[in-house]
Structures are given as C-alpha cells and as structure tokens.
Length: 441
Ligand SMILES: [Zn+2]
Image (cartoon, rainbow, N blue to C red; front, side, top):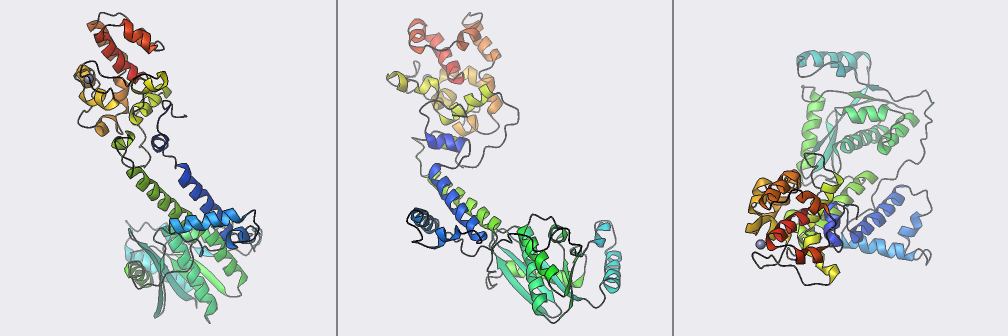
C-alpha cells in the first residue's frame, strides 16, 4: 500500500510495480542466503542445521526446505570459500604487506610506453633484486570469467563462476600465485598484477574483502618474502602481456579447469540473478488479460527514475493507472455494482479504453501529449509527466470553459460520491468527470 495502489489491486502487479520480490521467491532467497552465510562461517555451530538432515527435529524443516529450494532452482552452495573469522595478524602489527605502486605516477595515455617500461625495469632491478616473478591477470567476457598466472616458462589457467566480478577474479589470481609461491622453492617472490583495486585491497590492513584478508594472512605468516607490485596493462611489459593473453584464453577456452572456490558474495550475486530470472518467468506466465501491468511492464526490472520529481499524489496516480485498478474502473467491486461501461461507446470502462480508444477523451489525450499507439507507450517510463499533465489545471480548465464551469477543479477535487454524482450530472459532465476521476484516483 506504500505505492498508493487501489484496493483489490493484484498483489503480483503491486510487487512488480515497486520491484519487490514476490514472497515465495523472497523466502527462497532468505533461506539460501542464510545457509550460504553459515557455510562461509563454519565456526558457528549452526552449520549443522543445514548440513545434517536429522540434527534436531525442531530444525529439520530448514534442512528440508533448503534442499528442496536448491534442487528446484538447481543451485549449489557447497563450494563456498570459508571466511577468515578473525584477522590472524592484528592491525597494529608493524609487518605490513609491501605493495609497490610507483608506476601509478605515469599516465599511460600521455607518457611514452618506453619510459614506463624503463622505469619498471629500474624498480625491479633495484628494489626487487633476486626476486622470482609471478604475473597474474584476469579476464571477463559476457559469459565467462577466468584468470591466469605465469612465471618463467610455466603457467596455469583457471575458470571462475561466470558471475564472479573482475575484482574477485584478479584477487583469486593473486591468491593462487601466493599459494604457488608457498609450495615453490623460491624464497623471494614478487607478484605483479595490473589490478590496482586488488593490489591496494591486499595491502590495506583494514580491508573489508575477505579474500584479501586470506592473502594477507598467508603472506604475513610465511617465512618467505612475498611482495606485490602494480604494473600498467597493455604497455608492453612482456610478463603482463603474456598473462593478459593467457587470462583471455582461460576465460574463453572450454577446457579450462574450474577453480574450486567461490566467495559468499559471488554466490549471493548468482543467487539473486537466478531468482530474478525465476520471477521474470513467473511474470511472463501471467496472462495479459488478468494482469494489466504486464502490458506496460513486460520485464520485472525496476522502473527507471522519472525524469522529473513527482509528488506523492502523482506517484499514487501513476501507480494506479499502470496497475489498471483505479477508483473509476474498479470501485464497483466495493459497491457491489455492475462493471462500469463507457456511455459513449457502450463498452467496458478500462484504463486502456480511456487512454487509447475512447473518442470522448481524444482532446484531453492530445493536450496531455499522450502517445496512443499502445498502453506501454502511453503509460511507460518517461511518460510520468504527461500522465500528470492529463490531470493538470489547464486541461481541467479547458474542459471547464467548454462546459461553462468556473471552477471544475474544485468540483473534481471533492471526494467522489459516485452514485449520487452519476445520477445528478448530465452525460457530458459524466465523461469529463470519469476521465479526471480516473486520474484523481
Ligand atoms: Zn468510450
């Protein structure tokens, strides 16, 4: 009711109008989210409630519900990476991660690449002498996300969940490089990445990213010297160019092995996409006949913001005409009367008829600049002001002159007591009255 929809409006339309998940889907979202949260923080005892079928009979329903949901939406939450519950290294510890970002002083668009490359070699030869280099890079196409690590003649390719963000792919690449460095014989390791956000997040002791915290813990707890460096991409640093090429291959090749971990955030993002698709399918199954909003809003996506700020009254009015349930067309349900009919055309009185078809309102429509080719054009996004103008004083004024009424606005503003008015007013007034009454709610 927050949108001011008319009583007895279909609940699906109201939820779609405000872009709020229907309750059955929201329940799926909340249960799966709860389970995913517990999976990512296994230290809490509650994990048993979702992993053991007969833990306690009181908690059994959650387990059963969760597994039914996961099966229904074919979703998997078993490979969520466990979060670091508490930082192993306290933030006041002076041992910080060393991340070199010196090359940021160059703008690669207006600096000769050779100068940047020379500075790069200068840095690694002076500050990182005898360091073994790992280059990492990630790539994201519309459908695939992958990352690659290369060092000397070796490389490894990994594919992530397609919904993983590029930031997480870059961070996973650094994690994988760190783990490879740990298991290698090299004592001094430099990881070179072209992702500024990943490098700075790992170097920041107060980072909120759990994956970055995992990398910090590995680097700070090992005896080896593992350092990070940011390098600009596509300027011709050979290791980075190769990593870039390999990452693209990792994302596009169907043979790349799937990386076994996903983060909680990735799972939630994937879950949302899945459930919003489910909602869209559910929305499409509704018939246009019963659901008037579907003709105007075929997608469940959020309406774009209106180009102008609307008043509460206008918002309510627009929500009602879009949902198709307004006082003029549907108040008969509450008065237990017959469906109202258009006096001119003798057909059913609907929003569609008034906004697109009825000749009585032809002038009113053209004055308000209402596009009458379809209901979607008339009431869709961007039309808010026109709908509002349709009710504006000037329009009402124009009518008023025609009908020789000095203050029709006042009359229309009165709380409609439909039955009485209908009986008292002549036909022409009734038509005018009905158009404005529709817009006046
Ligand atoms: Zn008509």
